[in-house]
Image 1 (cartoon, rainbow, N blue to C red):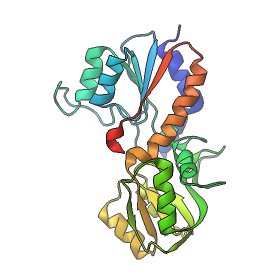
Image 2: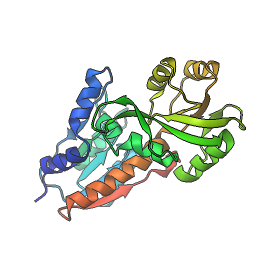
Image 3: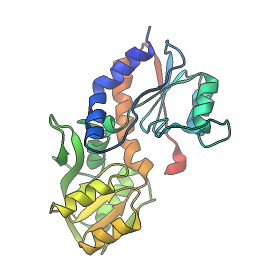
Image 4: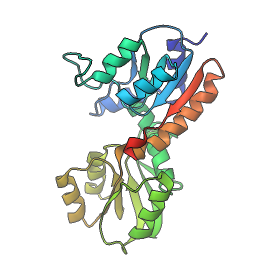
Length: 261
């Protein structure tokens, strides 16, 4: 029988929770792990980047009893719960009796995880880790491109299957080296640029105006990816690894929320 704790151990084997704890010690915030523990036995698992009303309803319709997410189902402390309030998806998961496990910064930073997968999706080979956590783990990747900004963006749209990309810079500028940071990693990107990391383009999500201004002032091209698209690519690869490790002890399904593409 696959239990929730056994499932967590499988998830942790691929993306150790200690990496999340290391990130927190370095100043980041996280809430990874078992978020909702409604029952012990796990028979059918839905993987979804987010815990959303859509993903919970999908899990219910497919008769899943457990959801594994990347983004924490509960991020900051909750002061109240309402079925139609701010945390409706959490209430709905509880109402349906669904377990929820979230693997966030540990999955971002682990070797072969979401951050490294993003650099690969962008065409990066033999990328270098910018914030090294040893043993191939870390955050932020630098890799060679050697394309014009226009051609680089075209290849990104094709590889990530999206046209929702915001670009700043001369379309004919030659991008020799690029730095990618999955999710909302702009603060980390700024720190790297300030330290003199040699890149021609910065790739991340959720950039604020003052951050865009600083990159442009430093003569960097900018590629702003939809947060979902930047991380779903690597999360699906994680799902495929876990699917093999579960080894038929439970059924697994994957939910791609195409609203964000």
